[in-house]
Image (cartoon, rainbow, N blue to C red; front, side, top):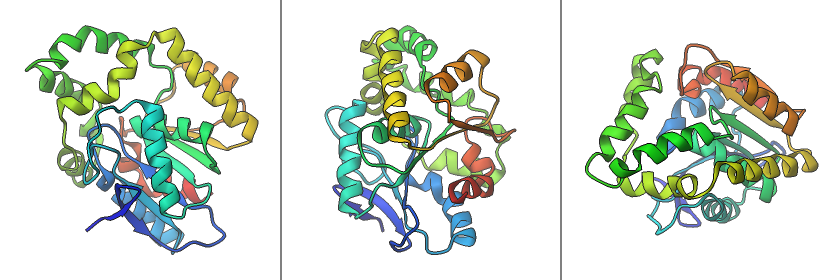
Amino acid sequence: MPEYFGGLAADSHGTADDRPPLVFLHGLTYDRRQWEPVLRELADIDPGRRAVAFDLPGHGGSPRRDFYRSEEVVEVVHQAVTAAGLDAPIIVGHSLGGALATVYAATHPARGVVNVDQPLLVGGFRDVLLQAEPRLRGPGWRQVWESMVAGMHVDLLPPAARELVRTATTPRPDLLLGYWAELLDTPAEELTRLRTRDMAAIRERGIPYHHVSGNPLPPAYRSWLESALPEVAVTVLPDSGHFPHLAHPAELAKILTG
């Protein structure tokens, strides 16, 4: 059974000590179970480390909200982090969770960010969403989501990880439209400005930032990322598609303890 902190369901591990606590945020439609392989590896190589995997609002055991804009969700997460007694954690986020981890570190105390396969410039993805919006708002929403999942290369994962992707998820139209509302109604230029601002705040605070991906970053995006945050670390965990934390949980655990 989950614990609850600030209204969010969570799996809590370890005890507080001088090691920075870890906070894990999953991707859209998934839940905290996505982090189980990484947490098992972490328990082996860094025993007793304080680590909490949360269900984001509207996911898993966490209650739904009327709105899911990033700044509002980050405030809910911060309340949960505070309620859990986590002081300036390292925020680890996959996909949507990587974007939220970035906003969190730009606005709240943090000792690091590990962004797992979430590009911060989403102009191209926004165009895809705008084209799909009529179907997202009707009975075709599931086909839109399934076509996106098909492009995540789940087939590259080992069988147990594929099963976790298949079962630890609850896609719903209110989640897709709610979390994507900000992309649908905000111009791409403004989204880029906001993420550039976030990276500037992270740089000013001296917060380490590690981008982990399943494929090499496109040159233009990597150029922007290194310009916005010259100290950024980039690691590619190959043959993992959109789920490098599930294809290579031991490697990600090592990154978190490095």
